[in-house]
Image (cartoon, rainbow, N blue to C red; front, side):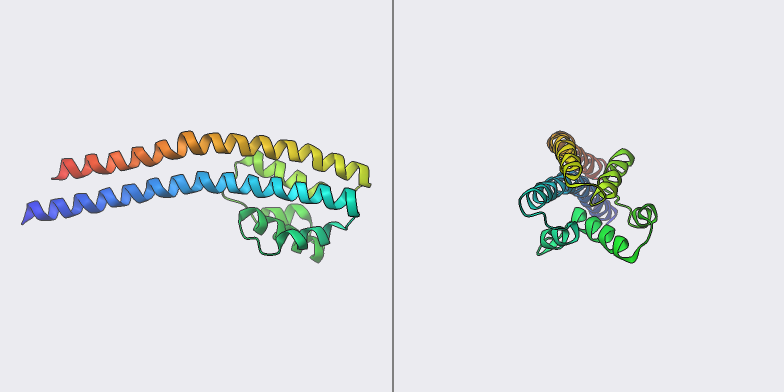
Length: 168
């Protein structure tokens, strides 16, 4: 009877460790998706500003239609706080993005904080700079996703199998 219970306990522990591996891998994939959405937004922002000279709030509304994700949530929260007249630092601190590292959060804040405040040429330069930065971050996150996401997943599965073998 105790052998069966040990086997069941080992199987449950192995399953939990595998699920932890899946969560880690999913986090890396979400970081890639975040920067991909950020890069898409900068592309839309540049196009709309240079071709149609659309106001930034309208650009944000067009971009958010039918899209869901971490970046879209952060963008919507920033726009909502800007409409309410809240300070942008308070709004940014209130809507923390757990996927990002501290430096990435500061860079995203600088991007949001500089939108719509200057002349058109300066806004286009601002968007071009952050397009390059977000593309670099996306490339880095894709590399981390391939390298670390898969590795952590495999490591957790192997650890779960090791526990299963030890307990059986």
